[in-house]
Length: 450
Image 1: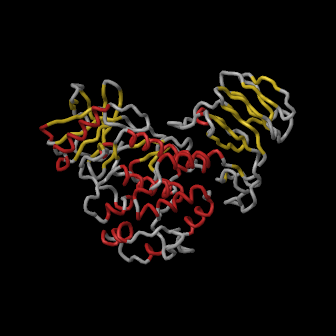
Image 2 (image 1 turned 135 degrees about the vertical axis):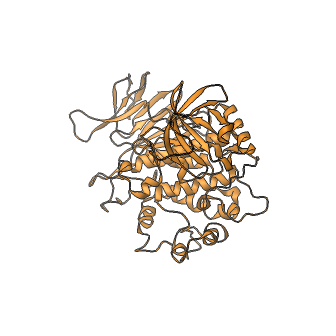
Image 3 (image 1 turned 60 degrees about the vertical axis):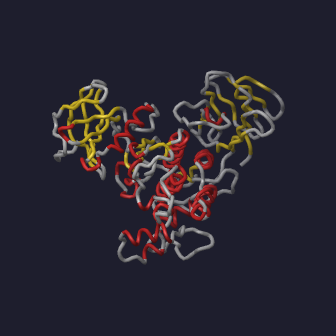
């Protein structure tokens, strides 16, 4: 906890709207809207966001009431649980869960903070996927977040789990909240203050794409040569760069804002290592989506692309570094050692009913896992904690891999010669081209060549 003094002193006792007594332990941090404290409650340690008095108005109170009434239990959000007020202190706030120490802010990647040194391409893609799915769930409830940015999403660099904080910015679509967002994440129409333009789910999609670009590229999508020409990045310069004349640094048609070699080498290298699947989505949302907000990439499309790329991560056989590959594409060059990456066999998974079954590809590298979402047509959420199958090494034959059944039901295996056998839980099916596995409920997996 921070030893600095805040608006509330340690030991201060407050009462929630539910009649619960809480005690302030100490200041955790502060931001543009107020301060966050650790508090002791009957349910254990929690966090209290306390607003600066000038921001504690009736409108903010109404927004908090609406959010608390929803009683949303999604564990990816530190959702407001109850309101806390004290007329003598001329302000109010709300109680939420404490952010566990394993979660770090996304700017830590840009700072190269040692705390996030364990982040890998896999965990960053997982972070992006979890972030997309979290906001998809929020938007499905008809709620616009209004301030998607670096400062509101925290991640575990090892697992890619995410926590979305500062959820008092979120309001029901169409309601006015007086929050436009963070300038360099805001949709251009909001930066320009166009008549009728208001923060919405549609503007959230632009902010989400900027956040994903920052996460995967360590760079802003509009900060190229034009940004380097700006001598003073004041509000007027920002409005021009992000609102009145935004140009994506990799816009295929407008090339005047390309990253400058020697000055912006990181984004040049990371863009080159990004699979075409994701590059195409960024190009579409930052070109077509600038002129026509309705053409911005929606969460389900981001989800499907990120999931497919995660399933196609392949370690370099020379240096061992993880490489993001395109499903079904040719072998890439390793981003670290510049050697060609050998692509392993792939598992073609299919599920669903009717003529158009959902198909996914999983690269068969050691420790790759099959999960429940692989067997769903339209998964609500990717859960990587409970695999139903895992690629394992043969105990005596080097280089030979199998798929171990981690589920609770037996699979049916058919070899290319037509012979069949059962693969009970805990047993392993040898992975050779042409092998077919029946995984249950109509789901199948076929081993394919590279």
